Image (tube, rainbow, N blue to C red; front, side):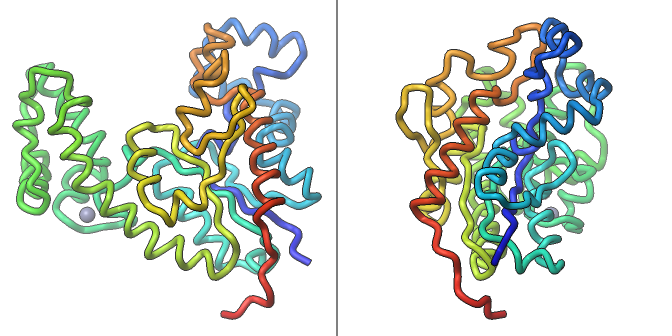
Length: 303
Ligand SMILES: [Zn+2]
């Protein structure tokens, strides 16, 4: 009998900010302080972490199914981290005990140009392993501060031009809002889609030979649009129960049904932009409902 559920994702899966819902004097007072990660991190205690682990959606779901959660113990991360985590579990004996995987998609803004660690191409090496999205932001800052680009910057820009036909200089020179421009859409389209295809082909399809794979949509609207355009992802994305009693696959549509869209809308001073306690409970309910309606325990695993 399989007795574990594998969860993989970023700070949303980890449960950042749930500590602020602990009903004791200290945490109630913290609702009036800045508790973005840098500050929150210093205040964690074994008690606060027990509360977070029990009350995040993974904790609620595992408790419901009387299963163990297998979940990364570090907060946050780039697009590759949740993938690496699942890969690392495949190499352990735990893999035989997994009922299903809940994979919470993070933002593609956090993906490498080439979905893998340790790529040796001119971009991945010379951008100091920056994601192209963050490389763009870094160069924007340099431009605004009138700092010149380094030789390595120039090599990375040239690589993008030669291999992806991305004209960074043109992008940096835009007078309009870069991130809503057509040129920016063209820029991310060139590598977001390529990476999602690799994610499906090289990872998701393999994982499905081990256990059912279910997704939770990305909180990044741009990434959501790209990721959900693939039937392999869309058809296995869990519809999330909104505050209006309706179900939504798109994260933004789900989030917008709540009076408090994020923790910072409920406790403004915290500035913490993670899901609220109510949202974690609703996500858990959504997973339980979906799995109970869709899950068929696979027969003997054949490797
Ligand atoms: Zn590369």
